[in-house]
Length: 184
Image 1 (cartoon, one colour):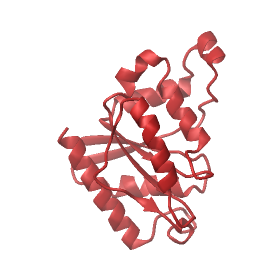
Image 2 (tube, rainbow, N blue to C red):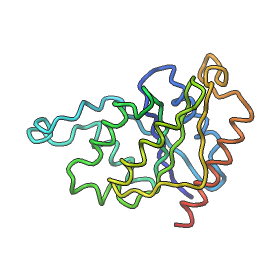
Image 3 (cartoon, rainbow, N blue to C red):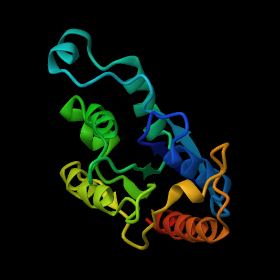
């Protein structure tokens, strides 16, 4: 069983990306399991706080969830054509202390997907993530891409992904990613 931890980079209750992650859990490839992690409760990074108190409990819990899975699925919104600050902050905390990078992130397979109400999906955000993933020595999967544009018309009022072509593209993406993780 391939175990993947999916993390939505939005804190918004009606987030399209949280809905996309829920659809990913539902559409996981046979032989794969996607569970969800959260960035909820992770404070803004402050080295003084880290020095005084160590890693916050919400970060420690997320690190344990990362370690319990083989790969990460980052479901990223796009804010002002780039990475959402709250999501980047969570990943920054996962890299603290720096000695944890090899244990938590380095070499870990990671895939990026995202949904946006705009016309270009999250192509800029996903591209911006690549420099971060490289710095953390992670293994981005380049076997497919999923930029969900026009998200407002693809989800129902409850946040469920209802657009069948997008569901099919998501299922195909997840199958390819799970296959690559299984083969690594």
